[in-house]
Length: 285
Ligand SMILES: C[S@@+](CC[C@H](N)C(=O)[O-])C[C@H]1O[C@@H](n2cnc3c(N)ncnc32)[C@H](O)[C@@H]1O
Image 1 (tube, rainbow, N blue to C red):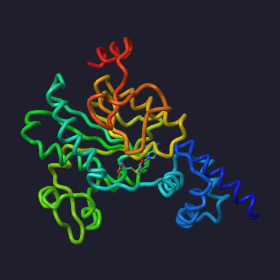
Image 2: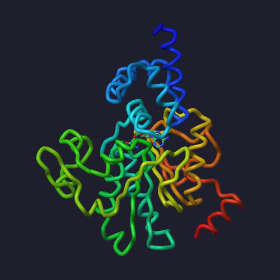
Image 3: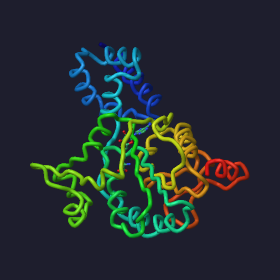
Image 4: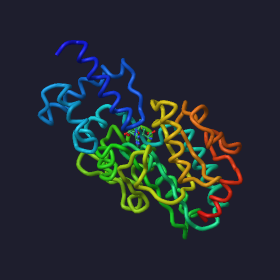
């Protein structure tokens, strides 16, 4: 295969990736993932990139597509990643929701939850605040486009180096049990968490409204148009008082006007209150 046809095939794979996930793959990143794509090709008996492209075009929903998306996507995550955000959630946002929600029902959604650390960090906070949430129904659902990440999140089994990154030792000993050389999350955390494979560009796995939504370090590589589409999907599951937390360096500004920075909570966003949003809120409650 000539170099120029190789470039064209990689561009077509990048276009497939953008269409499926919303993420824009820059030329430099495109060549960095080529080695990872070779693993996918080997595992599925494909001889070169053009075979891979052909397989992707033939079936967007099969295992090869899922493996390709997984190997190109960044899945970096850790417990209590960006501690300041979790401190704000623990000390301000959750007590606020506890004091203002009309029913004893708290629903949290983590969009792009990767291998589960973000979801379990929130579950640990809720358990630390056990008194506050006594007699409440609380749940944290995590969704991610990668079935491989979701399987790992559901397993809730982490390597020593995963639990050493950001997880306080007291929480490790309280909420995990050692299993050979790994750590498994406790049943109490499992009971309030769940995970589903879902694409934020067309979410199907979640229903109803959430009180707190995290979508951190997911929209970073999205084109502005697709970031707008993802925020529209999120807005469908938010009320006007729902707080949306994005990653450091991510913003809704320029993507769409549905969310704007919260005046109360640093780093959080809220939907604008309009006559239409008020009616939608009333219909949802
Ligand atoms: C860098 S990780 C962030 C994990 C976690 N939110 C955190 O901040 O630690 C980004 C995750 O977003 C997921 N993702 C990318 N595009 C997505 C999409 N269109 N829908 C749902 N998840 C997506 C990836 O599979 C990946 O696991």
